[in-house]
Length: 421
Image 1 (cartoon, rainbow, N blue to C red):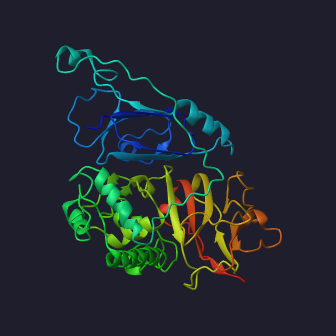
Image 2 (tube, rainbow, N blue to C red):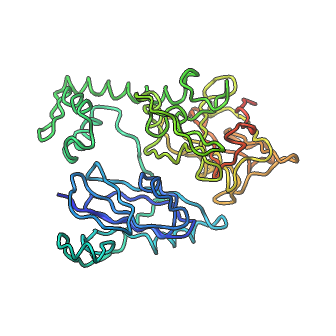
């Protein structure tokens, strides 16, 4: 059986971006830098600015657990991925990177060690254990690397699916209904998956249709689904319909406190399909309606006239004065085929309030901001411009970090993206 592991996350309010994927063994995930970790564990235990130790228990684990000292999480898969994103220090990423490399630790958990009380040891059911040696974390510098995060859109997708079925425990990660659908195309736990030529063609067609469906749902949402943030607007977020679990909308935040909605009893499948057509992970923090905490995202895939964005044309979006954020805001442009940042000579397809990695956007006299999207920058608007590529489509995400009440009550409203040339 896999054993638990521990992660230690550092304790400052500013950590950089990191990602870890490892075979689940009894892991301790320790963070003393206090990042807003995108995981169920961090949602349970708000560690903003405080750091913490996270004990990840593997599927089926029934051994001793510590009495205290850890945020404990039960994993449903043998492989786990942890990812985090936090802020720069004075628009400089270097202090953040140094903090992570110095303080992030991942190491095996030893039952009977840290977190186990003397009283528990005296009961005799757990033996005192020595802490496991902590090895240095191996970091891979991703800057400048070309990384494909898209699943295959042909029959080889199902080869990858088969690998997951074989390496993960039965009856834990996947529901019986899903496993039955795998069996219908020849994927069984403990058996080889060898589709013939005819079946490979069928699977290739299915994968291609699935990819196209995900993009279509994402970039042309339907008003009835409730994804639009403003009535009649192109700005949307599918998580507002069913939350991060794609079932029940995020809890209401009122003067009397947080009020969860009753479960709907069904999945918002279109929202889930669309979300994972462009994203690879989800957390309640992505759609919690709390002021001055976390971040809020609005997506946009078509212009004010309901036409898809054309990389050869120029568009403008106006952000009214007093943008409701208490940290920073940003626009980022993505390729609507690869869902990755659009690759252009500009290098950084972003505009916003930060001065790194490109100059901050310049406000108008009244405090508003005009942001331009197009193949060439309007004269004098280089800091407020994101380059696009003729012949390629795109979409954008507006992010507000530490969003304020005017965003949630919609007294502040981002403008539609309008074609100007």
